[in-house]
Length: 286
Ligand SMILES: NC(=O)c1ccc[n+]([C@@H]2O[C@H](COP(=O)([O-])OP(=O)(O)OC[C@H]3O[C@@H](n4cnc5c(N)ncnc54)[C@H](OP(=O)(O)O)[C@@H]3O)[C@@H](O)[C@H]2O)c1
Image 1: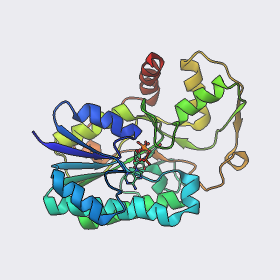
Image 2: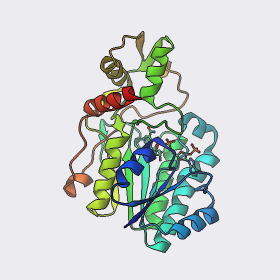
Image 3: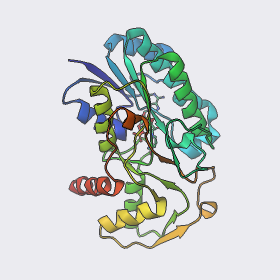
Image 4: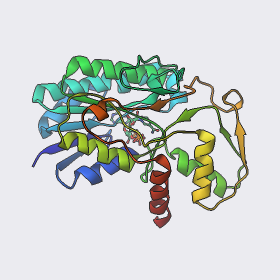
């Protein structure tokens, strides 16, 4: 049986990857206490010892506001860490899969395909783009998966994801303010994990793949849908980015469209609204 190493195994995407790959692959999980991706020797020892066929690196430092204050840590984890993992993967003949972000783009056009030139606006985006570039140097057998606005059943390393944060704010009776001038594609980690497995199973060409649920919305529209599906009517106010709480630059548009999946005969994911509906059903079972 082929072995898949999932790095960042306590994370929200990793939770679904473990479930989905677990059907037909031997799963090896690693968390930060097993090895820190930024520690080259530790990464090398762990990975060589378990000798996986495929490595999925979900580890990231992605608290965007914090990244701006800690560029060293951002680069250590998101860029050097990505390089360390990809390099050992190359040495043992394993495929490496890196999860990147819509934040590599500047948001100056309404959607971005894989061949568009990245131009990140913040430290997080720059560090992930550096990770992408370093992987390409380290190991030609790579999939770089750019995705966006993740929500999953398992808590993210950041704590709440956007959906659970909105539900928590409603529960606490807070007035909720959400920006209506940033647009992207919400993505269910379960759907993303299924698609990553499809790429691996079909052994599609190495390269860059944009994978998100279909369709797009503003954060405000996303929030409206969350509450509509939950039959809740909180005090929800739409605000502009300039008046929002974020102190850093974020892309206005970060919708990702995939030309590369189409070329490989891989279908796009279902609409985000359907995926959110399924998420809510799962969430309400908890
Ligand atoms: N969340 C989003 O909306 C979003 C959007 C676009 C792209 N992405 C990308 O998608 C990937 C998965 O996101 P996610 O939301 O599933 O993240 P997550 O829930 O935060 O999981 C990431 C995991 O990585 C671990 N980790 C962090 N630093 C590490 C290090 N130095 N060495 C080893 N492990 C480390 C974390 O462990 P600790 O908890 O111990 O820190 C955490 O369990 C990330 O690469 C992220 O950049 C996310």
